[in-house]
Length: 430
Ligand code: 4AD
Ligand code: MG
Image 1 (cartoon, rainbow, N blue to C red):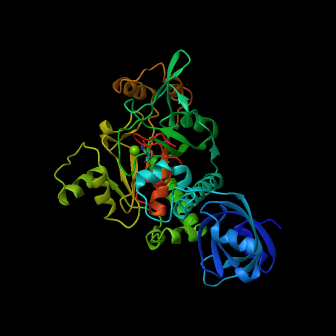
Image 2: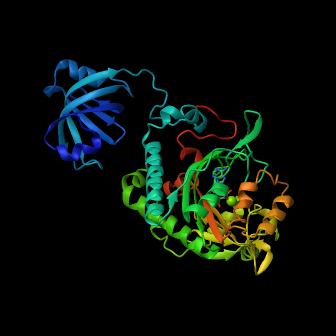
Image 3: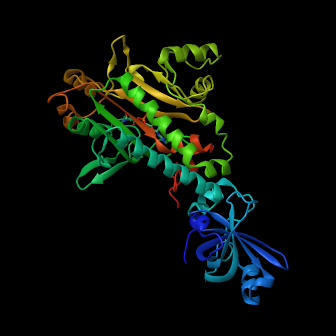
């Protein structure tokens, strides 16, 4: 019977065969312990010299890290391991030997590991982070499907730039100039006018010259857009969504969180609603905290966001930023037209902004004026302004950065470990 490690619990006292890699190994004269991994989990294989052929025991003793094998043996319960099961090995069939595997159990520097990302993905921590990433994606689809959203896939090659023109990846589209999508928002707005509640999940590209623990050049964004929804209602959707992913990860990734030594009490205490403070209040708070490098009208940097986040034990919405530091499409705040109806959601523990969202301008004249003010080509935005000509409605939406969210929930320091093959400033390999 061929099974996976994950299925082992259903095969106690039965003889099975598992295809696996040798993650690690220790042996003495009489017994060898093989640390097996097959992608579904990690399990110990016990090879007892007295119970196997001489050849099998020699194989167990000499086999190198990351060799691939078929292991045959009997599954037994094992209270000492976290996993709870091990396999009493009777036979080992070597599929392919591995020699001089570069990532050994000793400590390697980050650049070395990033150069070997294609192999580093096999290690326990990296495996756990990808599992958490996958759970967030699964819970995302669950949340949006359960709440009446239709998934719409915006294009990756585009001629419009929602988030400003300075950080675009330019490419040729036959004879035309095009760029890689920074955000699917403008297309999602069109789709919201057809489907009411829509979401997307796709890669986005920012040619940002930032080399911080929060910035990737290519990252995945989950965006939601809803017709007839004002900004306050959008904040409720956002907090419910984030709460849903936290609960799902806590419930379905216990082993991974434990392996990563994540302090889960910090995640368990996150309940809705999340606090909301205005940009004005945030600036006042920072000045009181002794920040001398900030005044009204400035955008917040990482230290500012962290100082604000540290004041709360949940994510915090900063609402109503100044118009001039935000994109062209945001609806003015009726209470102060120098600000807009928008929010950034700042994660706790220094993970920074995980969501940017806003109510969108629905007045044609104002939108045309903004397109001009921001120096955008009105022709390229005709599809977008059309939405304001044919039955314009108030609508709002938001985008959540997947990798920053994975970093926060996993408790890993840097977003480079939350993307399988991160694109970073100066890194396109592997
Ligand atoms: O705040 P941003 O730029 O918002 C938008 O793109 C809107 N059009 C979304 C919308 O309203 N539909 O980006 C959204 C989120 C940020 O909050 C952050 O989590 C993430 O995307 N993000 C990045 N993540 C990693 N590396 C980068 N360089 C990122 N830039 C933004
Ligand atoms: Mg933003």
